[in-house]
Image 1 (cartoon, rainbow, N blue to C red):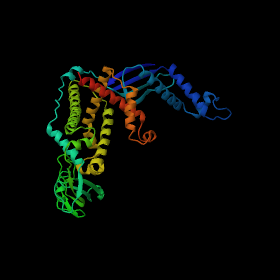
Image 2: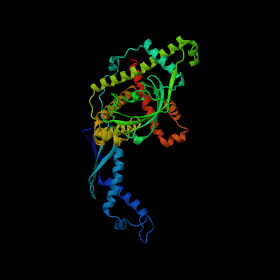
Image 3: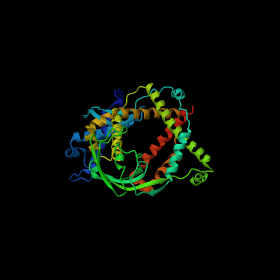
Image 4: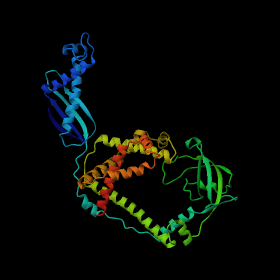
Length: 421
């Protein structure tokens, strides 16, 4: 067997393989032997009929094609075990020459991971600025107010609802999820519902209903319908909220705190951890941005297409969960086709893959491994969400889960090393 390699554009590799007929003939003989076992010929037991009689039942071309298939699989895997490329996806095979007494020739095209010349990432990590962390007294006060509010006592009111009352409502709209009934509870004026909705609840007593129309407006959500929507709301409860007094006794009831100062200290430490995590995430994003600016490589098209499909599925799930809307209805509202949305995700898909490939390369250079125990610990944490391992296996692929946590742990170790440089 002889082979040649040719790197194509878009991270594709062409492998041309030629097998001398003296070698290919062995595949023909094996094919005939396999056929003998399954073909019934009068006067002969299975497997004992002469080759020339086999060819009366099966055409020579069928024998050649079957032999070619086995030769392709056998020799393709021999070649890829010898070359230093990382192949991805399914290979595309094209037979170039297939005839008796001639060498058998075929070629294979397959996607490969690009070769990446990675810059001095350790130096870039050192030069990437870290955000200074501080916690203000106002931030601590906000958390304390939330803690106090969460432990407030509620008193039912007979009067009409006012802003800052705690209300429970039941509502529906014929324009949202075919009139499905929703329930919600919040401080009136602070429920963060679409603009115009909460204002219509002022003046309602418990048990009263109201119909109204609003044009949904939300700067954070540009995907809302561009028309007035009709709502029917029933006020279930109007309540006064009695906030407890912040004193040492209250602090001790919350947990292992000596007094209010100890509680504030704990809140400060918690806020610092949150801010450090946020700052570290921003640092990671900035670091990867700088690395990408200093690298240039072509991504396999099929890898990008696969990632686009993954992002599309994530978008569909998000729309269903957050907007309570079917994807087909969402497409009608934004006046786009699924293919147009898919194409709009291409740049994001490319960024995701670039990040993954660069991180993978750095992990290799740092010789970072995830131990079996570390992976097992993470999987066990995840499995707590299921009643049993058997129940989990029905919904997830445990081998893929292991791969996921292996990569996640490796990335976390890499960022920890680079962040601390």
